Picture 1: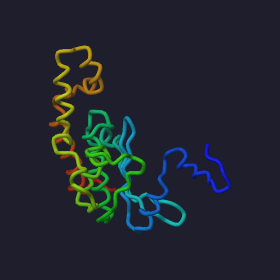
Picture 2: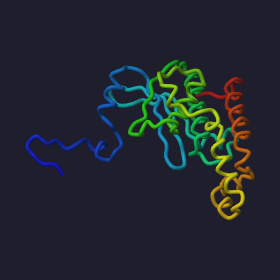
Picture 3: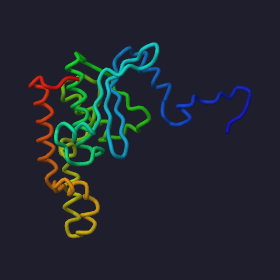
Picture 4: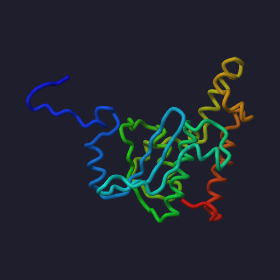
Length: 202
């Protein structure tokens, strides 16, 4: 550990790798609402957050678990299609609350091209919320719909044991991974229809 008279111990959340305070300061000083996109191995979370003197206030929030509970999603909640749908859901909730724009807050996630945080961003953009971004960072439509998962599944068809192991969660739901793009489109329509009908609120 560094020592010396001028050495300052980093803040606890920085030591734990949870907060980049320099980046956070710039986001907060912008005065704009933030689209906070976070992901774990199994789930994706998207929130619209505004900074207040006493701390952040969450205006709307969407979790990939909601996709299964309310909209019929049958595959794992941590994949790229689920990330997009979670972003779309968050964006539609935000629109229902009058939010029109936000800036992206990726936290300590590495901003690599096509990452899940950018799939969340794409979903929010498609909902009609304006978020400054680079088109180069967004995943392409085929990956958003899960075509890369289909290709991987097809490459394992000849190896039944590995296929069953890798896609056990899909098969438990009686959804072959090869049908993922069709399932994605159906769930996306379910989400949009819920807000168009006025039956879904933020």
